[in-house]
Image 1 (cartoon, one colour):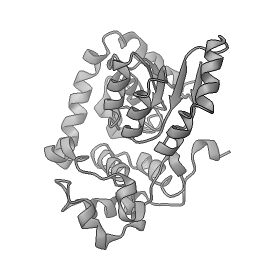
Image 2 (image 1 turned 180 degrees about the vertical axis):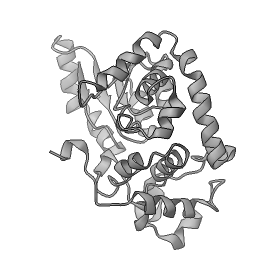
Image 3 (image 1 turned 90 degrees about the horizontal axis):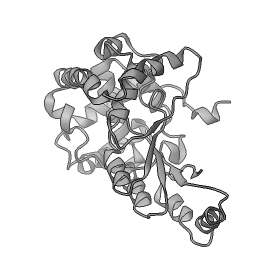
Image 4 (image 1 turned 135 degrees about the horizontal axis):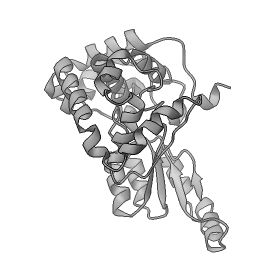
Length: 279
């Protein structure tokens, strides 16, 4: 197998699909029997992922999708329509820093550990085939092994936990926010100052609901120096004079500025680095 790593925006996708460059080389290698399946990994927006899937060039996709960020479900469904393999990137780390979960999240995920719950949540979607374990120490495998006996009936096993988490989110932030907070949120490229509103509000939401402050800090501090791997800027770059018009399509336009400021105050610290840049 071969994967094109980091198809994270439209420009990179266009280069990847260039008939005179990578695509032609890979196709020839495939015809020659030197490689089998061809896939791509992505940290990009859902519309770019779906465009890559619908190019009909790739056999599998590595993407982000887990309980704490379900935005790419439509991309998973698009991959399923083409009988593509789906590989979830970093469900335990990017999916919630679940190897160091807050006490509240541990209690809400009972009888599973947060890592085991998230494994089962992902695999309960039958269009998901593989998870990246990413164990940092031997005992990290324990949680993943804990999930194995439940995989066959994963959806049934995790349903009570999902209901408990959803209820807690609604109790803390209100049912409307819990079910519609991402509605009308513009892409970071359309926001004055390039603030990544979606991810800031997502991190704000899981912090308030599940006490996931350290996870919020870990991810938020990549903004501004994450390149196309985690694009956009922190809230400090916001042009507040133009912001009201930018979020006018959101049903929560009246509270979003305050939530963004609250998130920035809680999360902001020295700039973070992607794991691959941290030595």
